[in-house]
Length: 128
Image (cartoon, rainbow, N blue to C red; front, side, top):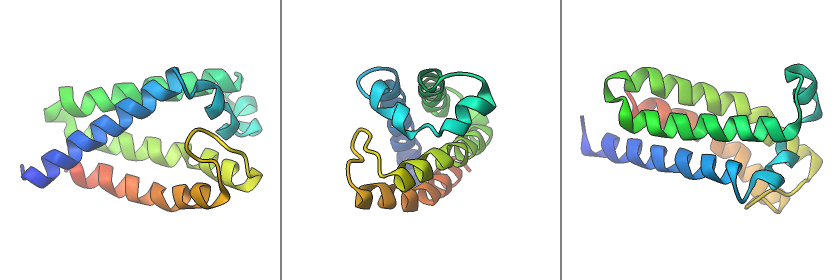
């Protein structure tokens, strides 16, 4: 295990933990904006439940990166899949020009779209 990968894994865990906690606390209301209407129909629930569930998943994945070193490839694949799964919400937010915590301009929302593939690659690289 290289130091770079270890640091990348720890940073990934921190990112997921902070993001997850924000979905469960201070950012919870604002993140509902990111959830597309079709997602509530598909999942048969409301936007708040989706935000809470995604926050809980982020916390669990962030903890798993640290707590399950022998399963890091599986955890990395799960993180990458999670980043892919939430991408439609990022597209929805950009297309509807709606602000959420830290994403209050179209430029920031567009940069967030470009960041998503980087997050997927980061998760896979850091955990291989």
